[in-house]
Every structure is written in C-alpha cells, then in structure tokens.
Length: 112
Length: 113
Image 1 (tube, helix red, strand yellow):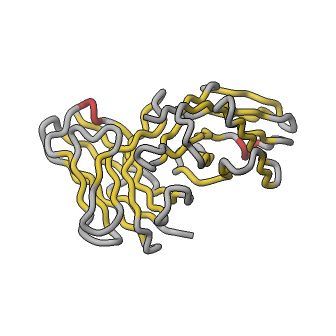
Image 2 (cartoon, chains in turn orange, yellow; image 1 turned 180 degrees about the vertical axis):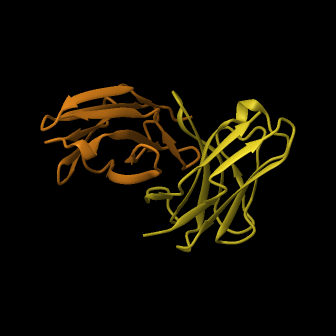
C-alpha cells in the first residue's frame, strides 16, 4: 500500500525566512496531496492541497510543488511568522483504499 | 465550517476494560474516520465509514471496532483496552470523494493503565 515519508521531523527557521518541508510517496497512482497543520494542543486543519494534474499551487505565503516523476511533493512557506509554528502533516490518497495516508509530521518552529 | 465534536476529551481506562469514543458531525458528510496519533507515526487510520451502517477497516484495525448508527455519529470501541492503545484519537469527517478536505475533531487523549 501507499507509504508517505516526511523527511524532516523538526525544522527551525528565523522569522521572515522561508521554510520547506519535503515528502515522498510510493504509489504511482496517487493523485491528491493535501497538507494539514496542527498547532500546539489543538486539532488538525487543512491548509493547502495539490492534485496530480498540476505541478504547482500557491495560496498566499504557501506553495506546494509536486514532482510526479520523483514521487515527491513539498510545502514552501515564505516570510515565516511565529504563528506558522506548528506540526505540518503531508498526506496522499492511496489508490488501493482511496483513503488518506499521512506522513509522520514535521515540527516547524519559527524563531523571533 | 463543518463541526466535528468528540467525547470525551480525556479518558483514563484500565487494562481489559471497555472504552467507547464518540464522534458527532453536523455537516452531513458521508465519510467519517478514526485516526490515532503517536509520535513518530503521524496519523494512522483505524476505521472509516461511508455512511450510516457502514464501517471499513483502515490500516491498523486490530483491537478496535467501529459503529456508525447514523449519518452524524461514529464511535470507536475498544472491547478489551490495552496499554498499547494509549494514544490521542482523532475523528474526522469529509465529503463523498477522497480528494476532499477532512475536518477533524479536537481529539481524545486516552490513557490505558
């Protein structure tokens, strides 16, 4: 079945710098890749997604890049702010079960 | 925004006891999910449902049962709780298609002693 690997377990950046979180997946047929954010002590909420018919999607300071050949996708956050500090989860839909498979999460810390 | 409510927020159970975690959603979503979150593993899917009366096994169903008596409610049942089931459990709901965003509840922290 699908496996999603999130490469950075922790990431620290200075406020105003950019942050990049990388994920890889194994299922060539995966077609949907969302990202979720979990602030400390809170639940997860959706932040951005990308479908396999495009290779780039931007929403304000967030950009997702998708490289289908390499089976890799990444979340880019520009001009980071303290409120960006959170755990970010990448995910992919498994073509077998049609369910979301999550990565292990990246704890992003934005330092003042 | 869709509201997903979990109860209880915290639960302490004894080994061998029965635990029921409840989830209610008010956005009329067909699909509902139960995940557990453990450090180093992210979120892992336990059970899910396509609608009232339906339950499906996720990636780690052993030791868990699920019940979907209505569109709004989805329960996770641990018949014989074990310490390895100590975790944070999240319920989520989503639309009909797998490429729609999920809405998560606030989580239930379960400790099995």
